[in-house]
Image 1 (cartoon, rainbow, N blue to C red):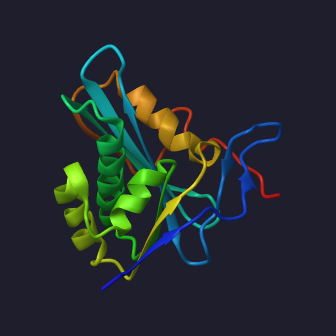
Image 2 (image 1 turned 45 degrees about the vertical axis):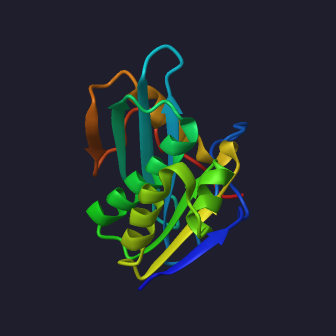
Length: 179
């Protein structure tokens, strides 16, 4: 059974010289999946995205799900964690850190009363138990750039799930440098 942990942000890694976006590496031996959600202001479309990297920043995989009808941003942020877990399973990862820029979604996973998206939280917690180690962390939006870009760009895709295993989608996981 996985140890569920809720953590704050860690030291940062600069993505590219002069860039304000920063990717925060996970601890040694842990894969990191950044997740994010976007809700369209003009339609009832929404998308969630997950981008996985290893501890060195190497791209492992990415996925995005486009849906229609859910317009609550916080519910979509919780669903982004669910998609992150699905990607972790697809990549056969064992030690994982899931990072979101939505502090309420992270807090919700650690609470005993779950509110309107309680059933989703229950499934996330049960699914997380299958991993050797699973952490849910909050990080600032600047460190969640790739997941945000993928979620936003996926809004124009057809409803359903897309997944990338070998090559990242355009504009995702371009480069970064250790500082």
